[in-house]
Length: 387
Image 1 (spheres, one colour):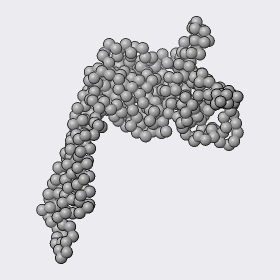
Image 2 (cartoon, rainbow, N blue to C red; image 1 turned 90 degrees about the vertical axis):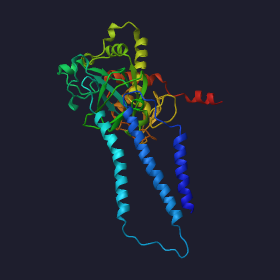
Image 3 (cartoon, helix red, strand yellow; image 1 turned 180 degrees about the vertical axis):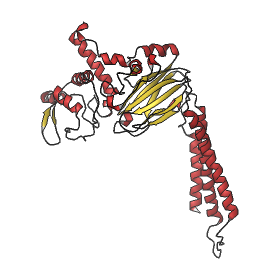
Image 4 (tube, rainbow, N blue to C red; image 1 turned 180 degrees about the horizontal axis):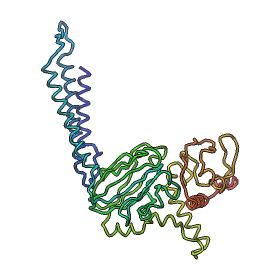
C-alpha cells in the first residue's frame, strides 16, 4: 500500500516539476527547429512510458495486494500479453530513433555553398580557420604543428598561405548563411557546443568531424566544451558573434592569413612609443593570452587559491618545491616552468599543468603580464597592514 502511494506521488511530482520548471531550452538561433522537435518527441515518448509503467506498478500493488486466503494464479505464459508488449515497445523505440536518425543525416550533410569554418580545440582554448581567397582549406599535418603553427599547416601549400587564422576564442559568422564546421582536437576529447544554435559535435583526436547550421538571429553566443577535457574544462569557453555580411567581411579582413604569420611581428625599431608603451602592449597581450591559453583555469590574478599558484605577487617570491628546495620566481624560473611544467612541482599543488605551445613573443608577453601583477608583500608591510 505504501509503495503504491509513493509511486503515484513520484509520478505526480515529476509531471508537475516539468510543467513549472524554469529550465527550458534557450531561444533558437539557427535552422535546427527539427532538433528541438526531436528532443520534444523523445521527452514525450519517455515521459508517457514513465507515467504508464509507474502507474501500472501502483495499480498492481493495490489490485493484487496480499489478502488472507487468496492465492495468485499460476500462468507461465500469456502470448497475447507478450504480443502487446512487443508491439508497443517496438513503436516506442521507432518513435525515439527514427526522427533522430533523419535529423542527424541532415545535420552532417552540409549544402555545397556553405561557408567552411575549421575549429581546433586544445586544452583549454579554441582556434578557428577560414579558407580565405584560396577558397579551400590548405593541407595540414601533425608534423608541422608548433607554437607558431598550431594548425600544422604546410607552408609549401599555396592554399594554406591564403587561409585566415583566428588565434582567439572568439569567432564571427555571417547572418543567414549556412556554415559547415570542421572539428579537430589538438590533444584530448573535446566537444564544440553552442546551446542557442543547437549545434554540438565531439572533437576526437586524429579525426575530423563535422556538422552544419545557418545562423538566423544576430547576437553574441557562448561557446562551450561539452566533454570533460581536464581540470580547466569549465573555463574552456569562447564566443560566436553572428552579424550581417558587411560586418563579418570587415572583421574577416582584419584577421591574419597563414602567410602573414610566417613573416612574424614587425620590427620594434619601427615603433616610436618607447619602452613604456612596448611594456604596456606586452601586458595587454599577456592578459589576452592568460584567457585564450586557458591559464585562467588554474591560476588567479587576485590572490585567491585555485589549482595552481596565484599570479598575484608571484614574481620575486621564494617558492618551495615538493622536494623541500626553494627557488626564486624570476624570469628564468617562469620561463623554464612554463616550457616544461612537469620538470618540478610546487609544494601544495599537484603536477597537472599541461605543456602549452607558445611562441617566443607569446612567452615574453605572458612573463611581462605576470611581472606586472607585482611581487610578494614585505613582511613588515604586511604586519603594519594587519594592525
